Image (cartoon, rainbow, N blue to C red; front, side):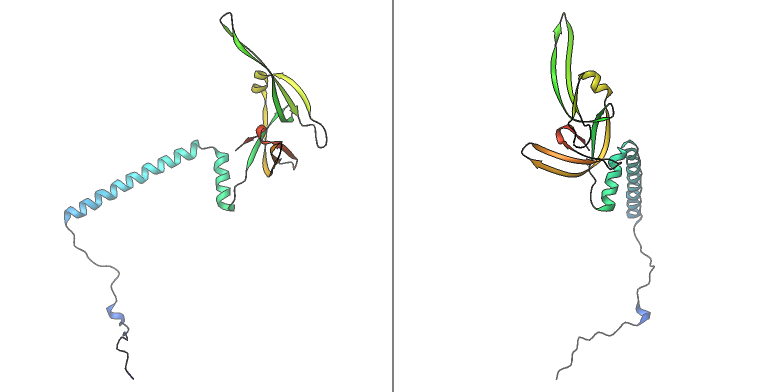
Length: 177
């Protein structure tokens, strides 16, 4: 039988490379490396200032959802539904839209018809308002989108509010974010 000549002998502990050593470099090279290091530190400080500025001016709700997404692995979709007199607006339609100039003045007469949610298993009620008055005095209510459905009539989202109430609304009447 032939002997295996490729057997390696373990190195004795004395021959291990020391952790600290001396290196000789030219002064020009050292100056160049120092200048690059200072430039990188200045860039890092500038980037940190930009990060702080963006954090201060960012939309806190979006940042929170992004952080929740990173933590949980999924994003929580939120939606806002408009309110009129503390009732959810489930649809609206423009009834009158007269805009034009008379006597060198702009005249605007717009009427909107709102369909208000009256509760589960009840038909929505309607109310007609001046569009400008409605747009300046409407409020919103935020909820979490729990399901989405598509059918022949359109796409609907089911939104659940903090109090547990759920409502299905056509996506054309939802402010999603």
